Length: 527
Image (cartoon, rainbow, N blue to C red; front, top):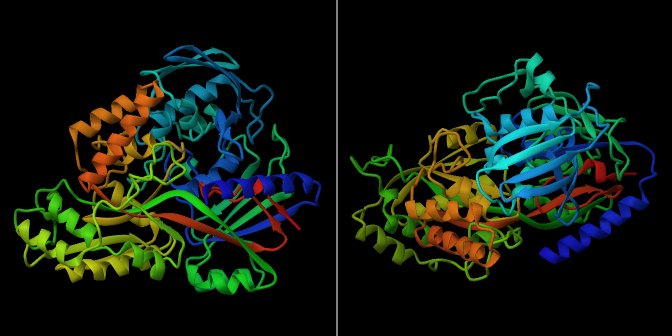
């Protein structure tokens, strides 16, 4: 699936180059969930990234095969194990006409590093930045980092003067429900300019005629409409109101495939869907277990794992749009192995009941499961199915579903007992998952920022720190394996599956399917 997806992507990219001379067009794009913000350092949220990377750029970026290539930096030199010198692209202008300089890089990376930024994972190894001259920046690291460039693909560059003028020097505090000028307005260097964003209504981008690079497609305007209702989203595509749907409802795929004017492209995503569990509070709210938190007990977590029929979810709920998972990273992520991806323990309802009884909960307990209803493929349906599975073993589960924008705030504020989440890996390296999801949570820093269950394992923390600076590839791979295996063996999370993502579009749309689930309008042609 993985190799085939990339081969198809390369063929599609070649087709785009051949079609690049087509007349300018509008791409009318729809999806179930809206972006969260236009502040580039506020939210580590895939739909938000998909649009922001069209407006804001980084020092480096990915090509079609997810290899790093120059963007706002044209060259980088490893001066020492902890010092990298970046030479910046000259002649680049921000959308307001201001010239791009080293001051903007120092400002932006510092902003990304500083709370309440939620993009500290992109700069987690950076100690300090120094301007050498207007087009040269030195990045000093806390220690050697074998994946620095991959992390920096997510560190987007803002205009320092613009941010200062509009009182946006610090990132928007999304978890604190802050609004700022930078959360509603944008000024980047990318291929598209933000025209306007009306949350839950419409987002419009227009082509940046002064972009330093050349687009590969003919899209000069992007109009994105969030359409939460699955039926309405499908109807909008079938009727021709929109050209492209990033998340067509699985129950409608057969109908869409058989509609002559439409086509589907699909591929494996670098995203794993899983359950997180509160392993921090001494008493689990609403559980009916005074003074106790059952989720702190490994036997309870294993029971919950063994109660889930992942093969049934794959067949009946996901309709094949999943790969049942045992690991917390997908196959195209460095650190994945076939052995890790096997189930930790088999689906067994009776064994699950016994584990609960052994843990001291023969009659189970009550549990609130929280779930987004507009973000992942069949997210709410997955939660409904698992609610029944857990209730079957005595864990009386009630489901609370909400839009992603509301749900993610609760996860970040640790206000959840059990929750469904999905994690895509921007660096295609397992450290990204380990550091964000498995590290002990330290406030709003990069380490553990999405560890909503707030479990803490000193041994795991130590391994993650070693992985960050280990330059010997075999040693680093062994550490990645051991850290992922420890997470699996302790049932700190309950992995369900790696997501398969289909995109649906009119036949006149030519684009490249991306494993990071981020469509690229500047690689797209609309006929």
